[in-house]
Amino acid sequence: MIRVEGLRKHFPGAPAPALDGVSFTLETGQLAAILGPSGSGKSTLLRCIVGLERPDAGTLHLGGQAGLVFQSFELFPHLTALANCTLAQRLVARRPRAEAEARARSLLESLGLGHQLDAWPETLSGGQRQRVAIARALAMEPAVLLYDEPTSALDPSLRREVIETLRRVGGLGMTQLVVTHDVRLARASHQVLVLDQGRLVEQGPPAQVLDAPRHEATRRLLVQEDG
View (spheres, rainbow, N blue to C red):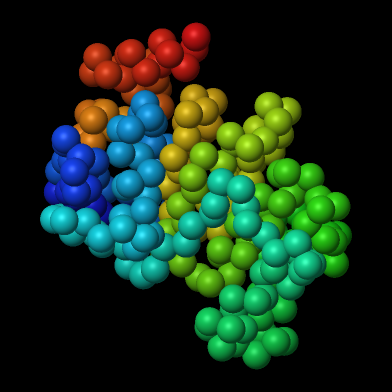
């Protein structure tokens, strides 16, 4: 479970806080999409949760560490899919090679990449590279998995594949938080959170937030996305 309470972050010299008292709860195994215009605090929230930024105030309860899947995947081009998923296990978690490879193989197979264990990143499609990056993050056994714009670097034809991948990860019991501009991805989530000027202005199931928004900022955002 993720529980965020009163999170605040104000960067020096900025006219207003990047995060201004953000609070929400996400149950274990749920997928939440964070929507908001540029500069609304989405990426700052993600960076605070994963530990790349220190909030000025507020509390975070994750039940463990958070893993981050980068927008550009950041796979090592000189390592196979399997090796990409074992390196951190061996160097950081100090797992024996056999144990690390067994876990990586199981995760790659669960994400539909059992036939690509020895493939180099350059030979994989964008969607396949993303699944390797997800398997690499899952291999470190995080309590929650965070994504920064997982569909922005992909062809529109691959966006359905991304949604199916997130559903597969959810089937493993993983709690997931996704920063996105993709309304279709948001519709596939359990919860939608809308940030505006550092504040959480709306939260609820997709049918409520996307089809019957209560806040003007949400309505304005959806008009922009549809346009």
